[in-house]
Length: 220
Image 1: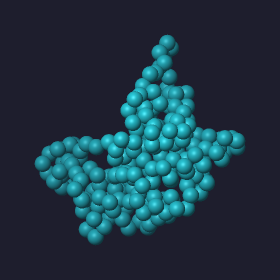
Image 2: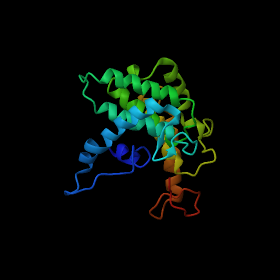
Image 3: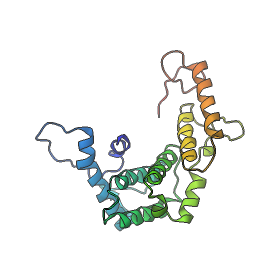
Image 4: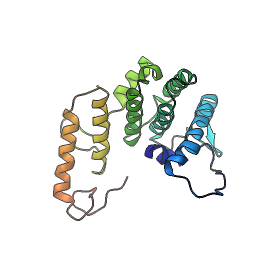
């Protein structure tokens, strides 16, 4: 549910929230009572408006968010895996996910976006939904595009124009690709080795240095 909370700011149907007249609910209560229903409403609106979708007057597909397809995918996957498998709405909801996937599959979706998206697919796989939610062509495209190699050199395992904290993003993608059966553990193990080596050399002051010893704390 942490991912769903993370996405509330980026993918919410409205910034207007009801007044809290009682004591604050638990995080899980907020997710169940507010975030998941908002996600369902977002899905309905996205299917209706497609690339014309706006939230609070701001066009969603304006090209400013290079992680957007992944954010959409993980928000919808969190919602889908919360639906009981005997719920009569589920078959149509899985088809709806597939329609959204086809809508966004060719959009820019860098680093964190790729991580969010492959995490979404892994959640759907674990629930037994992925084959019903994503058609074969879209799945094949995603398998190629959701890859740590977009910002890590596969020959040297050096980052390509990214600060060192992005090794952790690459590691997450590599391990999820392994979960999905898309690759073996070679890439993930090599990336982990790079992370460990960097921490040993440059992170002796209580934080992960995103540079090679310049003393800059890692940030996303």
